[in-house]
Amino acid sequence: MTASGSDAAPTRLTALYAAFNERDVPTLLASMTPDVSWPNGWEGGVLRGRAEVRDYWRRQWAELDPSVTPTSFVVEPDGRIAVAVHQVVRDTAGVELANHTVTHVYRLVDGLVAEMEIRPQP
Image (cartoon, rainbow, N blue to C red; front, side, top):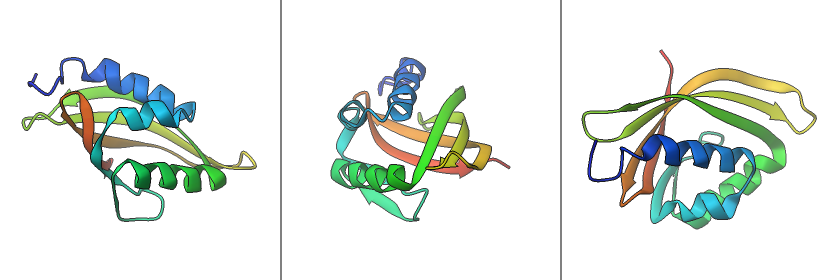
C-alpha cells in the first residue's frame, strides 16, 4: 500500500460507487481533487476538474441510467488502484443497453481521486 491511502481505497471507492448509483453528486465531487482528470466514457475524451465532471454526469443521466458495482480491487505497482466493476447501462425507459465488466483505474492524492481511466476487459 502507498502513502496515498490505498490501504483504505477499497472501502472509500466502494462508498463512491454507492454514491454514483444514488446520483449523490456532492459526495462524489468532494472525493475528487479540484483538477481531477476523468474519462468521458460516453461521449469520448477526458474531462478536467469537478465542474466538467458534474456537467458530464448531468448530461449522461438525462439520457442513460448506468449502475456500477465493484467486484475486485488490485493495487498496481505504481500505486494506482484497479477496480473491476460490473456495469449495467439502461436507457431512460429501462431498456438494457450494456451489461459487462470493465476496469476503472484510480490515482489517489491525499485520499482524493486525482485521475480515473477506463480499461476494457480483455
